[in-house]
Image (tube, rainbow, N blue to C red; front, side):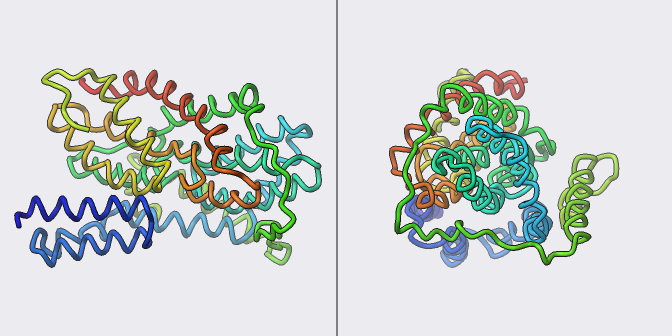
Length: 371
């Protein structure tokens, strides 16, 4: 069997496993790596070269830095600000989306959602507002906020790694050129028209969600909370001014051709929509990992700017709003909000449309396919 056929078979296996998640994503990736070595398609060095990739080191380091913010209770304290920012349900939704969106831009979007879900459930219990109307905007904002910076979501790092292979890269806040307007449009949408689309589900009597109990951080010394925030801010400043200080990000952080002259807008739209559809049925990390090499190959084959194709891939891959399995945060609130599958479709599909429209306006301007 030819190496090309073996590779295609492993690709098909990876797609099925990524979509169904019958086994952990990491295990799927390891099986593919080992399989390609055993069959002689790749040597050991090429197969496992990604483990020493600087972006992998950066991502692991940011989990540690962000984890300190969560474990000391500082993230919980930041989330508690929502109670002081809003008194009405609509105002509360806006405050939640703003705070969650901004936090997700510099921390793990899944971690941000996990730490603030119990905070919002507590707010709902005290205020009398329906938790189902507050939790869905929270997880959507976490997903959108992940597109504000290079470290906001795993898919961003995957695209960065693909781009670095050809000697290019995205700036630290370059994703925010598209992600920022999408987050703003999403907040405006749920503050107006989308407010009526949010489900108002009663709490199930048998719901014993682990999120109903908030972790007690009262015994954590104040200096630890402050230090975790100082370390995070210092780390972010180091990343933003990478060129000026001369230290790399990793150290600081410790669908086919469309003809000879394809339409850039049409190709952007196709890449965006494919990634958008896939990410609602498999994780955004798996979607980006699957599509990034394909998008890079398409860009190189047609002489287009690979940054443009990969940006469309990453932004489209983050639009996991329409199903409860689109991203971990969606699943986290499924039981707590007593949501049904169609609740996500009803509230999330309009947000996908908004993200698509915003992206189709900004992407061709900010990241043209042909210089």
